[in-house]
Image (cartoon, rainbow, N blue to C red; front, side):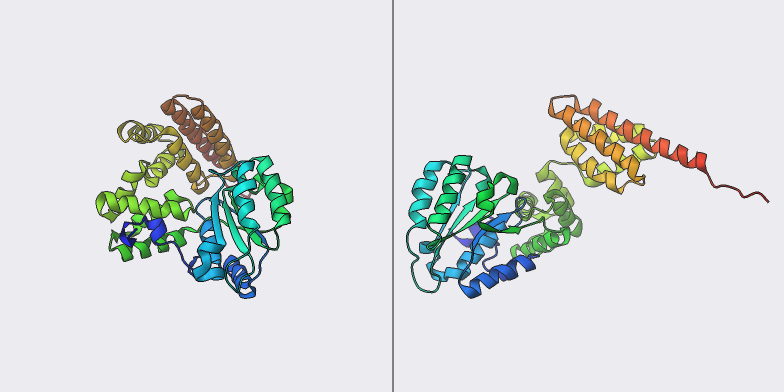
Length: 336
């Protein structure tokens, strides 16, 4: 496939370890394995879009260079999750000798291995033990707790975390420059907010925005995401805190009725705004608990407008109570 026909996530995927952004400690440890031409079994754990698979592929490329096709097998456990896969595909690959000189073992990359059945994981554990001299395993998972303890104990664990907003913005900006797509700071920040540290998601949003309007702006990002502007959510929450419940409800109705945003999307972003409100920690805890209750009701089919209005009323009530307590306590006047 021609380079210009590739999705941006593949076109701009790092090819070498040093090209991976913001993972210096992990990259340094993996480079040490490359220098020694030896490594243990590895377990990469972390949220989606945090470069786990990219790191595994870069490591493999630097170990084998032109011999990567013969010596590296990549499987997705979401598709191949049963015990039969372990007994046939994985076992056949693991027991064969490495091709070429330099690295004396093959590498098997098993993505989303937390989706494997318990029986398949037990079979995988035995395969890892039996063919330790001919194959190393790189297991990739979103949730470490879903991996059985015997496998975890046989791996060196690497924990990947969400990318900071400035790293996401920098990456999208460099891609936009390479693609000759105009972008502005507000659009880049909007992508970073929607991506929530998931670099793959950020790149996909940027590509969709560029394809739909030819540029990356806050408006084009919101159009392709179908979500509310964070500033609209912020205005709604601030109006509630200030006691302007009518104004807050007006913003809410516009988002629900005119733009078609889902109630749970609005609540999710409102939940993120709680931390920035000028309220005490105790009041914020009350609102977080209230948001959780509303989210549960929405998940079982309750009316979004009624539930979100009740949440805004709770915000207004809590803020009003806090203002009242501050007035009641007031500054004390020392007797003359």
